[in-house]
Image (cartoon, rainbow, N blue to C red; front, side, top):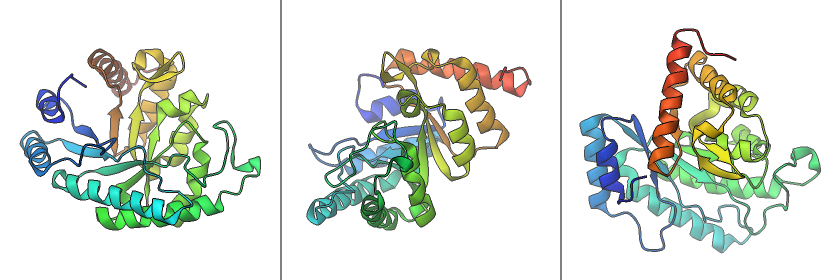
Length: 261
């Protein structure tokens, strides 16, 4: 968030936040070293915050090519091993369209006639392996992405004990109302990503979100006693703190019974 490395960022946020998202989005230049992981773990212990780890974005975990898929699983396993010192609350994974994935638009649904079963079979194999590496499938949180409808993920919830990372900004990019989806799937949601969308670009301040929608989401989180992690996923300082203030303001009003639907 700040224009610094991971450890200085966490030092600046320590004592203010309850969870930190550790973005390990690519490993081209190597895995996180043990010194970093141990330093983050020490900060978490000292200040009482937890961590979620976002696995690399470009892992073809659904690839039809067995060698490519096995290599992706091995990379993910190595990232999990390199970050285990912080005892992550969840490992967030993008199941991006990959070689062998169906060609389907984000507005389409399962009823569009595409046979997703081969894709589901390959993904299930990958996620089982990641769950074994992480210490339990529930620690693997599948994140919905803008490239296809979230409904494609639901069959995996029936087959596996994995969790959801419900990304609100990605739903908004698809023109979806996130409130009914949060209500329907909160019990399997381990992480919620909150961010706004502006001019088609996400990870913007929550000031760009309809405030009634934001209040409705927070009301569901409160009334259902959600025990997972809510991440304000803005990657710049000003949007992050502006969003934080908005969330805190709505939360206070909810506690007082004053927030509008």
